[in-house]
Length: 277
Image (cartoon, rainbow, N blue to C red; front, side):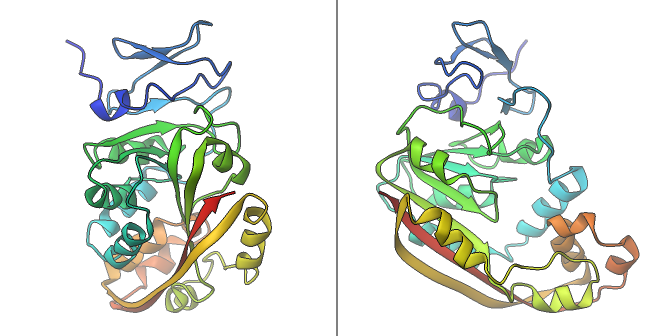
């Protein structure tokens, strides 16, 4: 007996498109297909892969995805999740969470927006297994964020991008008129204490804000910018998870993580809301 298709995914069928030919996708049993004959099977875990060609390289392997889920489950980043929910327009219907990983931030947003429906997009099948069950109104799919999104024009009310890659032209295309983009990125002193203690952690570009506005300003108007900054007490295990869930995990020697002890770090991020021009 086949597993039922998640209701959260069926609610997105009317706007999903085939990534090959851009025709509408229909559902039969647990397979999405288009009139041209392209088909995409749902994974047992409840997500669907709409990747084309060679699989995209994922930043999250199984260890990283588990570390992310373990760390976020502690509630350590709850102030950031609350700030995202406060910034999001309360008229939002469809939320597209780009590079959303395990779906933690989208789940918090959907808790506040009772009528909204969400879709987590990531290339990590490990993370999508968590995302597919993050919230009853959150679906999960894999596609390459640097190609044309398999979504109809103007089909989304809010694009959420938290510590994730950005494709501004596609964000603008899939957003409905007056739709919003909510971007969260680290400030230059984010986790400064941890970066000082762990050799090999990826550094932060001091020109990040300048580069962000260069690519967004032609397509979006900035409506609000909010700094989220707070001290965070972390156990040695939480500190290891915090490093392991980031791109730095691929550059840090395992023995460097074993030397971490209980301590405190500074969480420092910038969240901004932008309206599509």
